[in-house]
Image (cartoon, rainbow over all chains, first blue to last red; front, side, top):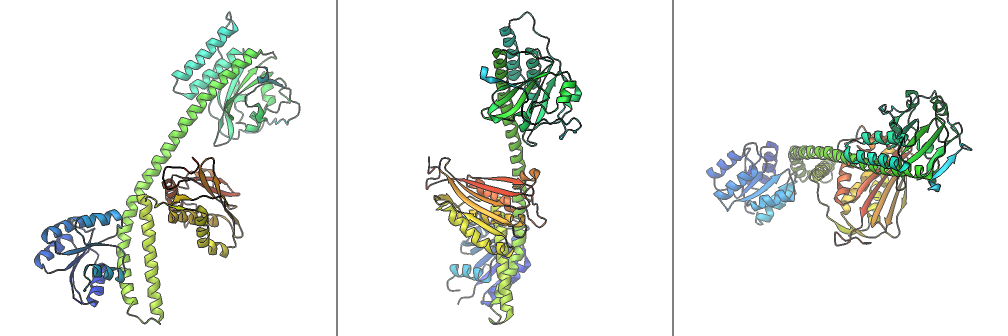
Length: 123
Length: 450
């Protein structure tokens, strides 16, 4: 199993902590940021991330803007979009902007791990 | 036009002389009008022509129904050289005939209340006939004979305002002496009444359309507010639910499978996922989700919905009667959405009936109209008339613990299926909700029975 470097960008600390718990138990390294700008700065500072878990509704800038900027910085980064507005059109929009997958909130540990496993079969 | 006239001498039929009875409904204020002077020196045909021309002109030039009705009563009284005339129109809310225009009558007589269809038209076969009333005291149509007599009235002529097979109102012409009427006179009165009925119908249609438009505009406004609210709620609630779901699903794997802890955590997971579905439903409603139509038999959807609510009914000792159409045909519908609607209607019926009440479900096919009907009937508390228009509005609920969303969601779903829900209810007697769907085959626009 290959451990992943994961960055969670979500303004809800409870979600960041829960993702940290679930993913660190599987051996992944997890960092979190609670604003879009802090998330982008973190990616710029530490380019070694494999996966970003990105909330679409952030307090400073819109999740889709963050997604665009991430894609501009690095096309190698995989982004899984998390949102409370679970519609097909939201998912398609996120995919068009370059998201690797889509995770409608609320989700279970299994939902999260299965989505990651689809992108990183060796994880 | 001999068959258009008949005399009523009051034989048979009950007379309700109740002068002391207060008006049952507040009367519409009636303007005091003066009858035109008799048109002396003119031939009857010149008189008819002038009166008819004046009425038609007022119908075409006036934007107010009241002005037209005023002209009609004044001219009707004048053309028959009568003491006065009174025009009543059916009020669909009270199901009675209100006075809408009058001339030549005293306030005492006009202060009498509205009258029922039974009084205006005791015999439906007389819908298109002029009635001449010569014996005020015994004619079943005369509700206030004493007042009429005191007013100096000795004879009445009733001219119905009817369109097709429906009575819209009545013109009653009052005379202070007995006289004979020629067929031409009666024929002329019927012609005026036909014109008048047409314009009343037209105005009522316009008023209905306006009312429907306002209702729709209010509804859309509420829906749009609900949409914004639902989106906000979805985000705010889904975030904490994510925390609950992630932690509980994580812990559930760590605890012993035998202990009560595991069971409790699994309940938390299940209930949190249920919250997710409820919120999704709210979002779907706010978004007006297009139905995923598949060819299905509505009888099966009804049976499936009944299977889900069966226990609830059993617990409250409420009987469900079921009649499924044997000739039911398949139609394109979203089974999940329609099942949701039926569950909703069934649970509403269950709440409406007391313990040991009865609920009936019936499906039927109207091949001529190309429609399918599902009726949910209960013998419960019923819905007040004023509330019947509101029950499909979001947040309207007669129950203290109701969200007021069930019927609003159901209404949206049925509308998206190009169907309709109608409500028929009487307080204390029960409610009948009727869903009507057009029958659709695989081609969405093609009707099976077209």
